[in-house]
Length: 172
Image 1 (tube, rainbow, N blue to C red):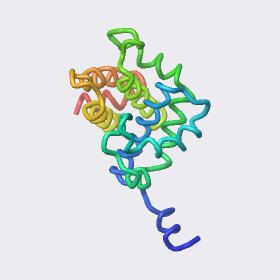
Image 2 (image 1 turned 90 degrees about the vertical axis):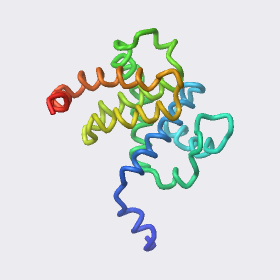
Image 3 (image 1 turned 60 degrees about the vertical axis):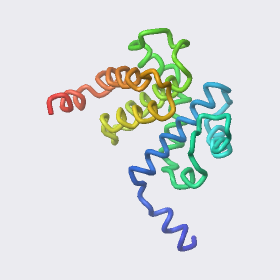
Image 4 (image 1 turned 30 degrees about the vertical axis):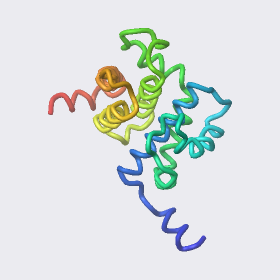
């Protein structure tokens, strides 16, 4: 192992690295919802090629940001969301004010991503997850208040999945 590999392997992901991981996981989930692929592993390999394509939802994400994102979190979120899609959709669908098929693909992907992280990543505070998902909805979602919709749904999901943590958050 070279010195640079040792440094990279020992590097602890920053909040920014984790935020980029969520953005790239969102890009992967969006692509998967539009064009379902057979495996999350194949999709994880495709995401970098989507960056900087004008016809994707990638916005201004760069290959360098993908290289520096928290790769472990990116792959975990993508795999968990795809593998557990039906269960996760059932969790958030009960709080939708319309049928899931009427929710935009971007908002669908954000709800799937947020519910995944709430369920499978208790090491991340629910308020951080909600904030990150709202930011993703503002950046990539509809201009008609989609972020409010995402926040409302995921807040209810958080109350179900993390009742003790959300009770403390509301009491503070």
